[in-house]
Length: 240
Image (tube, rainbow, N blue to C red; front, side, top):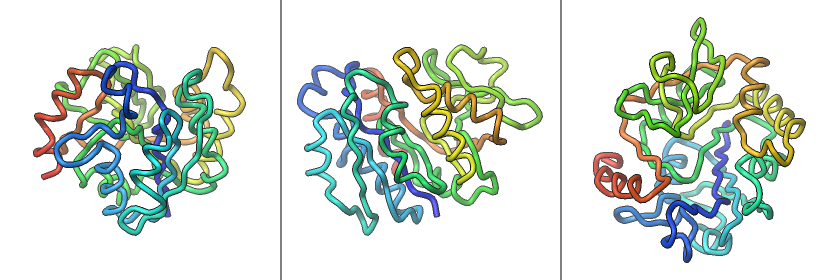
């Protein structure tokens, strides 16, 4: 059974001054916060435990969500260095809880509930979830390159015309891939290398990864004010 790993430690500086008072994942869009939409999707897909990595204004998240959500167990891990290091640190903070398959999710995305159902029902044990619709591409988004239907790299520099699609913040790991990934994070993490992508790129050489394309389902990734406006406009379509 997969766990959910939700990375919610960051400050969300591109959304200041909103994030002066609350972490980005607690921004309300429509009737609920970003994090509540995420947790609803995981619980409705049958996930029994979500591991949430907190940092910035952690008490607001913990007080809002508590220790369970729609019958799903909530486990918190704290990234005390959230203001210094990137996402890689958050994942390492949670490693003791990731001894089996898991779905990694950034805490700034909202997507249709059928996305996770498609991911979990897929025969692909290890996958980067993408949206191949050209309209989904953004300059600072991760792009995925395939060779013989296998993911060979993921980065923000990959040319659009050669990439399979945009990765928007969801990753599926089997138990074997999780061990490789966490080991790579531990081994290559340093002052200059604080994100998760380098460790993931190394893991791609050790374990076969594929893509699961969810272009038929709407989503929103919320990094800045423009993204937030877009999410407000699309929310009824996303949760329909």
